[in-house]
Image 1 (cartoon, one colour):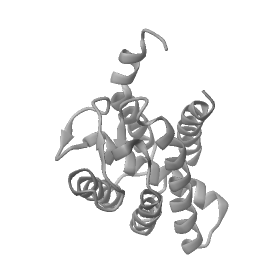
Image 2 (image 1 turned 90 degrees about the vertical axis):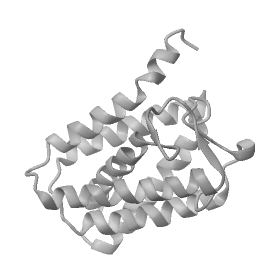
Image 3 (image 1 turned 45 degrees about the vertical axis):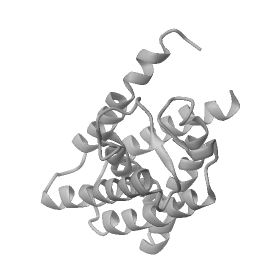
Length: 184
């Protein structure tokens, strides 16, 4: 590993925050409805993560490491922003794939869950989070799909006009970054 690894990992919250900011500032109009739409996956993410890290509910028993920054109730704030960002970018991809609202919600949740499968491999290596015993339980993925579905149901009901090309690039960069660590 590179000697810059610790520095690089320390900047993870900044990288995620800037990615979210790029998506947000490129929206085609921002209103109180946009804030409501963003609040749904943000708050849903916080609530479910707090239940997870503090009580082992929904995802299984896990805890967050030190590389995701400031925590509230054991949940890094950037994780809530990440829930929001992942909902936005996967909703844009799902919108590109189908016009059917229910298929979009299901596809968005499925894409988020598949991305989680890839990320889970590297999360402990980067001290992002780790499951008790080092094994990710099946319930994690089932809960991810269900909660992502709720996030999409709420977010997509607002019909936010985002910049899909930016969303596709952000999603592709996350996918490629973590997919590389499936190999190495």
